[in-house]
Structure formats: structure tokens, C-alpha cells
Image (cartoon, rainbow, N blue to C red; front, side):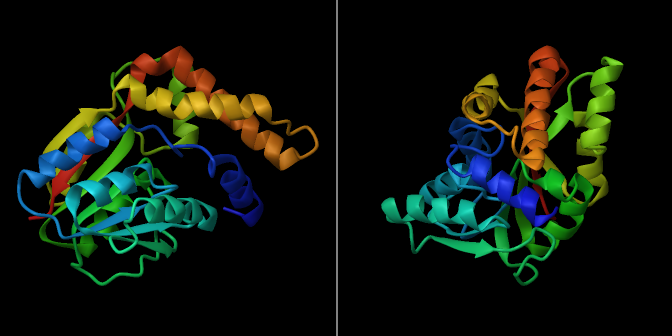
Length: 247
């Protein structure tokens, strides 16, 4: 991704509550499944954005949380949230790439990534991020997935062009287990998780004019198309939380 596009993304999303679909309730539900199985002392949040889920991880676990993102503006927003909540000692920030994680192998009890693993690819994330887990550690990701085997060709073509690894939930679970994890659970993001994301994004789109900036206009058009696709075809796909454990 070139710097111009990265700057556009940072400018668009830094004052929005989320950089992807999600909800505090869904984060807590997935986290509670894990905390029932034992204490969590060290957490890595990959692609943390401005930290909607990072704050939950810090508040609910009592663990040390490493929050990593490639966009410094997002980390600056998270720093402000963290400091206001008195969590400066609990949440540490890292400006780094998802494929160049600055941590030692087997460092974490829990690795978390909401709506960000697609940047690397689901297979890449499971293969490479899992190396940072302690034996018996947990990996939790939210990933866009098909909910039906048959769907309109226009929709299939759209997502094949944008995220070729998109697949059925059952196929994702098979891949998880083929890669050596045990599946703790998989559950769909509730509809409010999409509203939490798309409603503020739509308001931002209405307030922006990209006519004088070709790169910005292209970005805005892509977001509008994504929202239109969702409104027309949302019954065919959703985000799912995948909760897995390293042996």
C-alpha cells in the first residue's frame, strides 16, 4: 500500500469509533469464552486501529496488552483513550507492520485481531501469528465469511476481486484444524456490529467531497460500493469470530 493511500485511510478513519465491523458485546463474548479456560497474562492485539476492542481487552483481562498497528494516527487516538482510562501501564503501543511483528516466539497467552487478518490473509495469519503463542495459547480473529453455498454471481465476483480467501465458515474451521489448532468456537457478528461501523462511515462519506483529489475520490467510491453491496446482499455473508487454541 502506497503512502498516499495510507494517509487517506488515516484521515478518514481516525475520528471514527471503529475501522471495521464489530461490537463491544461480541468482543466480550469471545473473550469470556477464553477466560473461562484460565487466566490471561499477556495479550497481543494485531491491527488494533483506534482500539475499540483493545480497551475491552485491557479492562477485562487485567493482562499486559500489546496493541499494534501500522497507522500512527490510530495509535495516537488509542493512546489518548488509554491514558484517560488510567491504562497506560496495561496497554503498550507498537507502530509496526503485521508481517514484521517485533516479538519473540511463544510470548503470548492470547493473540487477538478484529477485522484485520484479511490484510495478511487468513492462512498467513494462522501460520505466522501462531508462532507467537505459548503452547496452549489462544488466537481469536474476526473474518468475513460466506453464510451460504450459493449466491449471486455479482456478489461472488465482487468479493473474489477484493478478498479471494473469503470462504464458508465450515471451510475456515477445516483450515484452522488442518493448521494444527483446536477450534473452541465460531460465532456470527450480530447486526449491530455492522451498524456500529457503517453508520458513522456513511455520515463521513456524506460530509466529504473528493472531486478535487482523484485518489480520495476513488477511495470514497470504493467504500460506497462496499456499503451498497452489503445493503443488497448481506444475507449471504457476515463477519465471524473464530476462537482457536494452539495445542
